[in-house]
Image 1: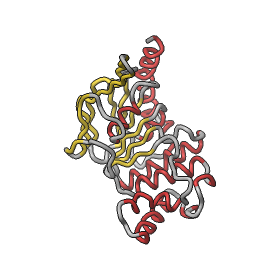
Image 2: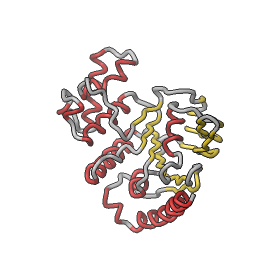
Image 3: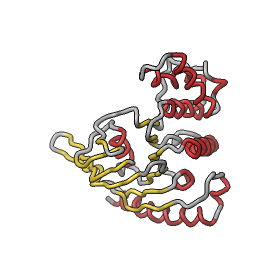
Length: 256
């Protein structure tokens, strides 16, 4: 269980103070897949970085399974929009890196890394280097690396934002299939409404800066999910409601 209690963030430069994130409360249950939508600059990534322990809240507290988050930890795996792979390591060694850092013998780390590469469809590319891979393949490697460490929670900051439309949809299906099998808890930031609905079991909409959680909606679409669900009446109804909620915040941000 992730509990975000009264978390806010103010950035200061000299005498200038900018409130980027209003006091925010949010609960994410075990095995939940929560997607977060919001206009640009509303604090989505700031909130995610605070949960990851990469940034510090100005006020409030983040608890994971009742324990305060005070910095990065192996219980949270982070996947960024940029691919963040080590260019001097092979695909296999990138995935095994965290396992080796935890002290696993190389043979065991390599075995687990091979297993995760198989789950993301990259077992034939284990000896390649990141520069030899497409963007989608690099992001699959980053996903395998995060999951190989068996985190309690997976944190994803617009992980498919840099991919072309077709690759993005394939990555959505790949991640959702892994979540349906592995039942990880996922906190997923996106600016794409279709992606938020298709991936999430819940969608949270953030207001314009300074951000706050404006709306939470359950996504009551069946699993396993197939891309054809995007043409269903239930999907369209959710999309209309979220589009209106997000549009009002984008307009508010433009007028500020």
